[in-house]
Length: 243
Image (cartoon, rainbow, N blue to C red; front, side, top):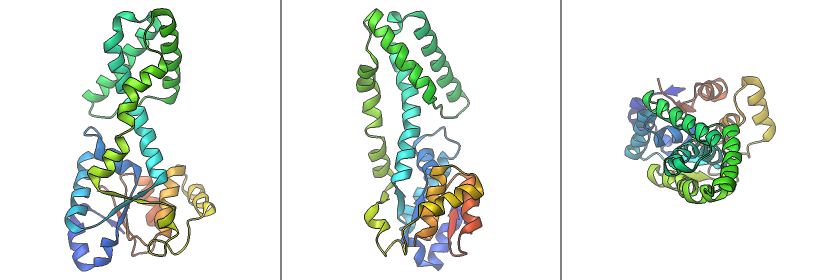
């Protein structure tokens, strides 16, 4: 069953079992972190409703990994823009041109109120250009750039999110506990979800985790995840998603 945020209070008052908790997927956590994300306000309303109704938010290792990877691509772009501002006068033309292009992309995304994420292909290219510029102009190489610009951001992003949003972790101990699961989620079942729906691997993993758990709710801003859960879940399982 799909449920909107404004119905949470009424549902909890009728069914205290909902306080057992809700699994939140990557896009919910990501949206809560970035004001330019289209689901930012919805995500904060969701966590506010959790706080007021006593619902515990849960996530797992796969969500954490995907969340950090998305943040790597966001923060790497911002850090390259900062580097460009600091070292503009010491850059050879190909490197300077590429950095200026990223700066323009970041600014354009901001004007359009969306989050810019650099591609992994571009990250590899910047590493090559930065190391070449370091040899010819004495600017910081890639490792120095990562240590001074990038690491301070990426090292704290997960713990800050967990602290701000009150996230609890479903680790191995919880998955093996009868309190949360009747049986361990199986790889074959995840592949079945992936094969039948065509959703991404991480999405199929979180859907399978929810279906096998005793937790009554999952929150997602991804319509494909929402559809995959609704198609397979028992009627007493609830999907919280934007309307």
